[in-house]
Amino acid sequence: MFRIQVKEEFEAAHRIAGYPGKCNRLHGHSWVVEAKVAGKNLDSLGMLVDFKLVKKELKEVLDRLDHQYINEVPPFDGGWNPTAENLAKYFYEQLAGKSIFHGEARLESVCVWESPHSCVTYEPDEE
Image 1 (cartoon, rainbow, N blue to C red):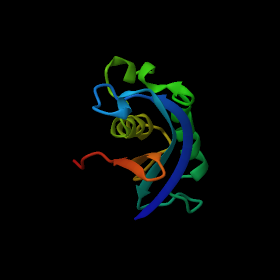
Image 2 (spheres, rainbow, N blue to C red):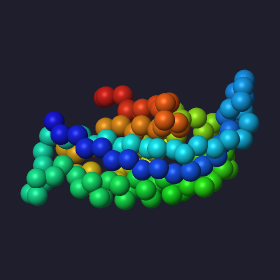
Image 3 (cartoon, rainbow, N blue to C red):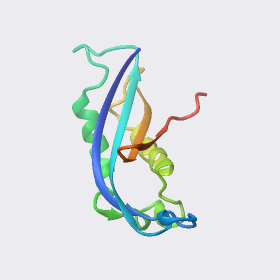
Image 4 (spheres, rainbow, N blue to C red):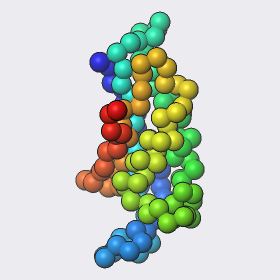
């Protein structure tokens, strides 16, 4: 099994509505998002998936939230709290269907860091 991992960053503000503490107030993070791709077979160049392609797709997804108030951006404007957990699932769902994943290569997980010491990883249940 091969695994590749890419990392991108974005800046954004949010608040966790209903949280019983400081996070209920507007605040921002320098978010770091890591995407892991896994698979057994390499292409004719000897690559699972080109790092450059994965980074490009990840950056396109993150750019939608960069320098935004996340609570005002769909789907988070409809009551879905922009927790690190929900962001990780959202990023996973946005990336998973991209055409860069071919053959057995698949998006394995997305990890969202909201600080240098706190992160969450989302990976779907295996079926």
